[in-house]
Length: 208
Ligand SMILES: [Zn+2]
Ligand SMILES: [Zn+2]
Image 1: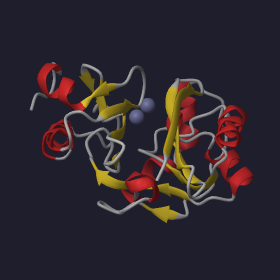
Image 2: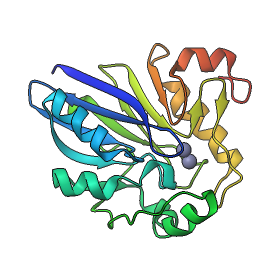
Image 3: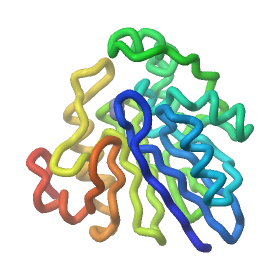
Image 4: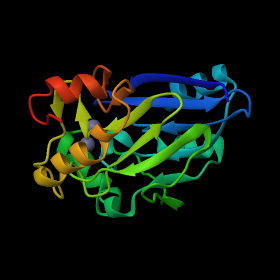
């Protein structure tokens, strides 16, 4: 394996989109294509990857709006946790609430399962709380966690949206994320990266 990764903010709410792949097998994934499909595809091409999955940490509008365009340009399946379908199905209403132009998203092709394995040495970790279907993705050998809006540098995800659950969010962070390698980099849903160890010691909301 030779893992390559690029992360950059996309779309109206600047969600962090991540492209991760293996240059030895030539395959990779796009995580959270929230907008700026052309920039995402240009980056995919510059990395020389064939995209085999369009994967979502959760179904808030800012993480999914370019899913359709990325799918039409890669033919890759769209992944989301089934428990977030009530959000996926109401993306038009979410866009209205946030004053963001609506782009239709196609139906997902694949339901994410907890502990499901990914190429590139990755696995899926169901971490509900921010939304019922929120999922984190851990690449153990690369010591990399894609956490979506579950965990931020010094903060945690909001739980005041429909389906949010503060108790469950704390449990997901303490029982699933804080059990991983402390040195792992955390790619958050918005804003700067952090490490698991830094949050275990300094996060004002959820300590180890
Ligand atoms: Zn969110
Ligand atoms: Zn978000």
